[in-house]
Image (cartoon, rainbow, N blue to C red; front, side, top):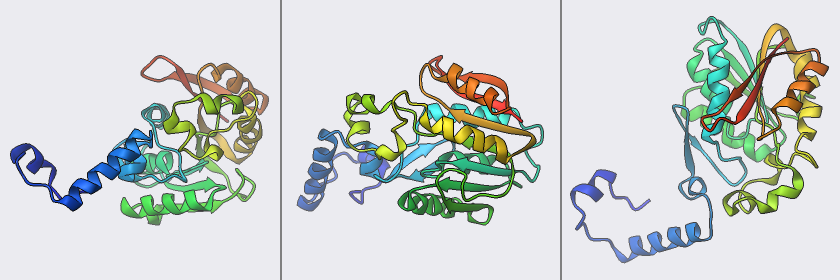
Length: 248
């Protein structure tokens, strides 16, 4: 942001800073003091092996979500297969693009109801050379889709509405509420989404969703109600049941 190479900061710490550069640093510092997330300030976030564009219109990709990537990849017997993937609530495209980066012959559809988020996802796909294998669809969950998929994933909103304002300011004040609010108990989106995912999954297909702390058993019950088999409740590095994995 200052036009100074990172290695020069360490190798030549006496490099003079112009008044314009100093003003820029101060402006950035004021934004951070206001608790704006670093990903918004920098405009990017590292996720899996990718560097993704992030804006105020998208959820900031988190390390916990990499648990879902690992869980899905571990259960795919042939990563070179021409799989069809779908990602609901794609946001930056983080989950879909991370999976496609590991599955060279797969194609994927990213679904979101936010046009602004889809624009960011398209840009991220382009920057990683994945545009030929991706398609992004404006839809309220799966309503605009009439095809079936080998793998379906999602990190839907799961924060109880009344809890959002009590979250750290980086989340409550700066992340899009559309990507956070999960209704009174945080499970509204799963109640809508899981039956749709079950209908769009091929026989023997794989499904994985991220969940909030303590929600895995209830989401697993929704899987079973939709006729899915629950394969695992995957824990993140903190030991929290972070993902529910199922099969058709």
